[in-house]
Length: 51
Ligand SMILES: [Zn+2]
Image (cartoon, rainbow, N blue to C red; front, side, top):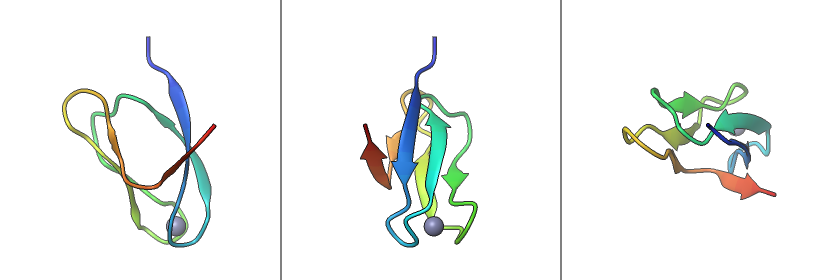
């Protein structure tokens, strides 16, 4: 089961919902800053994780 996480872009403060596990990198939809990196397992989150 995958968990969802809310990540805030450090560059433009846009918030996006991401899967904890990613098969591809995720970019910010607004400014294209990289928000999360696929590692084959748990994603490496590059933005700010919100609770
Ligand atoms: Zn952004």
